[in-house]
Image 1 (cartoon, rainbow, N blue to C red):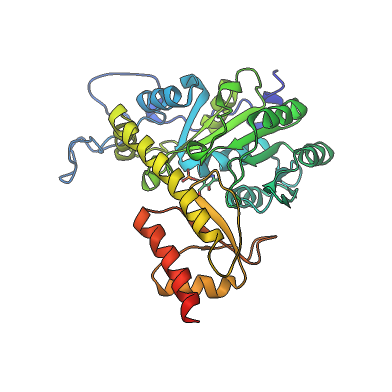
Image 2: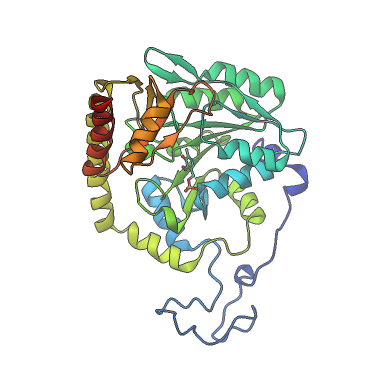
Length: 360
Ligand SMILES: Cc1ncc(COP(=O)(O)O)c(C=O)c1O
């Protein structure tokens, strides 16, 4: 057995999962094998939603593989990357035994999935320094090895702190963990970053996996399409653990249209605009009264410390601007996370913070 498969729970390595009607591998003209309705719903605009969808549509897998620079068999598509996170934890971690390593403050779903699975959570806090936050990769590797962790999550660019880890450093971490744990690099915000994706390294480094999503730069959050890029044998195991029909066909159609060459051209323009707005907003906020610190960001958001974060939050709310209150997160007792919006929305943020101060 490969070293990678040994990381999977023993009881799931050969688990076949549910044998759904769409996975049976048979074909024909008259479909009477899934207790569906033979009629279309009157509201169906021609999508054929009376039929169960393909669990992993080849068209979408192929397009995602093309965009992320991997092969189709290295792609698992799911209901947002949240589903892939959950599947990884369930398939690799035995409750009460196999730990998950995270670097807080960080995106909360790694810890939520670990909790739901009963997997011990090992936290290696981010370090806050003059250049911004950074992951202590050495400490993460040591903790993973000492605690027998099966999964290490590295969010890069990191939500909410904004930093991206150089690809070479993540690769070195994966090498250190080889045979012991899977390193999952969450690139949900990769499109906004200067750092290259690690997807191309999966072939050389099988204990490396990459998360991507259409929810951010591709503006398809409500379609709930995300994916895991990983070695084909791991993808095959996770497919067997996934729900029978995870991808609603209207969402698949929308995603395919949203990934057309034409749509991608517009998406790239918007990414460039977000990046320039990010720098504009960061500079303006750094000079704004009441702002202690604006962290450099490779994502589509800024983490900002305030002298009085409560007052800043309320001032923004009074202007109708809803931002993310980070004060309950470790090390972030005075911080808010502000997504980069449309230019006029970013102006509203600046106006609310500036005007509030002037009136005070
Ligand atoms: C770092 C990170 N990973 C994953 C996700 C989940 O995204 P989705 O499930 O929409 O693909 C998010 C959402 O905010 C995120 O910030």
